[in-house]
Image (cartoon, rainbow, N blue to C red; front, top):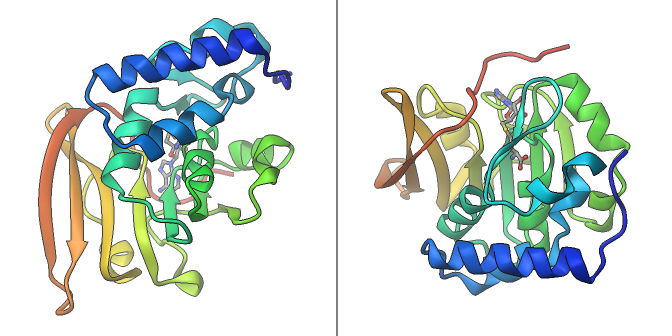
Length: 218
Ligand code: SAH
């Protein structure tokens, strides 16, 4: 069972977590405010209440993880989210990152390749408050051509390469935040699509994600 009560104690723990993330270098107040508004413990089973407000990744079902809060903040900050931006997320997982983007006013399309995770999310009440948040079961390498173009693309699994189909689905001037394999870990990149289809690449810190895998898991 996932908890559904958000009391003063949770709010206090959340505020402390935001202070920690701020100290680690996150400066975008819109990101911090969105994360402060979302009860992260709702995304974990009741037994894990305390860890929900530690700055750590945590295992959820089928061997997957809910990203570390700092990582969620970092990627959200790089994404430059504006209200009504159309954002494609690859790797729904717990749906926490997707809710953070929706809380920031984005229209979010998120894809998960694991059927079990996808079904769990469909019975999870919290994300239903976001009218513009939509869940898809599929292979993120394919993106969602019928909904393209997107203003932003965020990949929340370790990408073996830059997926060309996702670049194709990006609007001109659009940006993609992608953790790209580099040795044992991933380098965070931000790609900006130019009018001629070429991309400008900016490089940031190293992180560690679960792998982005091809095809769907049934
Ligand atoms: N954004 C998530 C973190 C997800 S962990 C959160 O906030 O909790 C990475 C997720 O990416 C896993 O659930 C994994 O199943 C999924 N994934 C890996 N490869 C994928 C692909 N090709 N398409 C869609 N999802 C993928």
